[in-house]
Length: 274
Image (cartoon, rainbow, N blue to C red):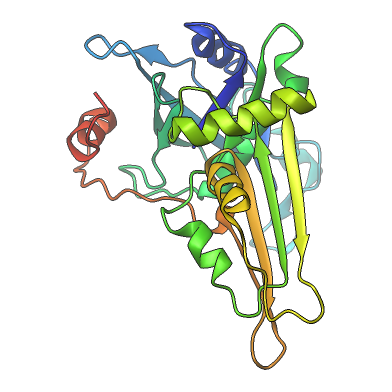
């Protein structure tokens, strides 16, 4: 994921994560989540390491079932059930690593207990934890984007009979990838006194499909890692074809044995992380 805080000073992300670590958000359905306050790697000082903690919330006051009898549990038996108020079932933990230089966060989707979590769920967790409502006015605006596969935009533009294209670009970090393109986007946002730019392109009735010029293609490429790009088209039989950059999260295969250190394995896999 790309986590862009604007504006931000050196060390701002540590304060942001420290604040977020005190919050609990809904992950999906009855699952809730929080993160640990990440710690700084002793050797690589720009690396922060933490965990995503997920569990299931249950209504202790609601009715319980007796599986043997196939009916609601006896009230007297229910009174004997004692669960500490700070205990929660179905706990899972997944490591994450945040690179302060690139503002990118890497996370496990499968831990060493073979438990899994989806990329969209992790995105929802961090988007909730880092929202302006949660962080408050003392912190900069933070935008969370699932980094897509490298060819994600090309796949969207290649949709058959592409008739609708939506591009949202949130203010990217000025020191992010493609600095010239990022500068042009930031200059445009500055001129508009805006935080984000949203563009919806609709195909002309007589046209076969949408064709992007260089300016909008650049906007889409920046939006892919700092926002979202969505396309809609039609297959030959008339069925709608839809694709988004969020549907194509970038995945990195990291070979790990049980008990391996996540960052150490990540470091050996990703060039330039250290």
